[in-house]
Length: 134
Picture (tube, rainbow, N blue to C red):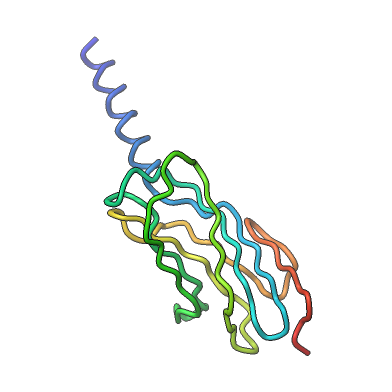
């Protein structure tokens, strides 16, 4: 009996730890000429100002930050929320970028979305091209 209760408690604690990580659900990268806009949907149980998604960024394959957005308030009462960031310049010749998310107090999420700019869609992303740069 005691062993069953201990196992149940450990399972509960383990599931809580997993739930704390922010998940990047999907990304739409919209190109208009040489400028991009990112539309990103996050899944996270924001609780308060001490526990919420507070930052996300786009980096290249060498981990150089191409764009970054600070979030200043928790999205409480919702399981997912969308953020947009316009005016992103991705250097010509860049083929891979990554979207990463940060949540207080846990840090950067292990999950990130890998985006191959040479393909119109992939795992958790789609690319929309209005006026592609020639």
